[in-house]
Length: 202
Figure (cartoon, helix red, strand yellow):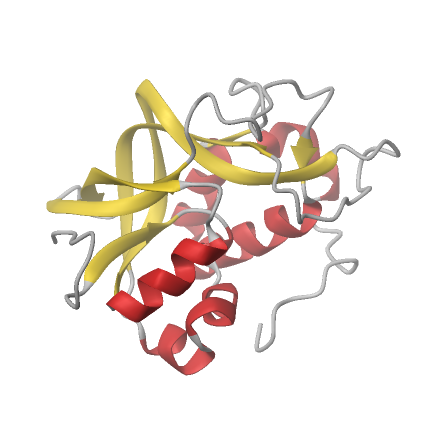
């Protein structure tokens, strides 16, 4: 796999949050296109997945807190010795433009990919990662917690790939401080998802 940042050629993109859910991807590139994608489960070394980015347009959930702090999106940041899992899929130039608009708080970076199941080296792909010093980054769990919808959508997408993939998602997803695992804080409510609407087709 190799990534191409511009032009009409396809690029290989890694989804690691709500883009794990096919119908969430479809909301940006069209549902027919999203469901036609062949996805490859991958791991990315040298990065940590965490909910430390607050988009201005995000609503606030109140799954665990009455205070309006549950409005974080997932992000990945360089972190030595860490890794996370995602899905790699090809996108055409027009689809990439749509996704760049959706992921406007991030920049695309090129990373090495390994197959989640076999460990095979798959070359390079791209993913969305925010600048470390961006104004929308918060590193305190007292000030920022995940948007509950994003947890539900991401985990649903992950566990649809496989049980092992979903469990690895839980093991490698952290809160804003980069130390506390999301699953350890939300464990008692993870099955209580009736308050979350799925994207169209989900």
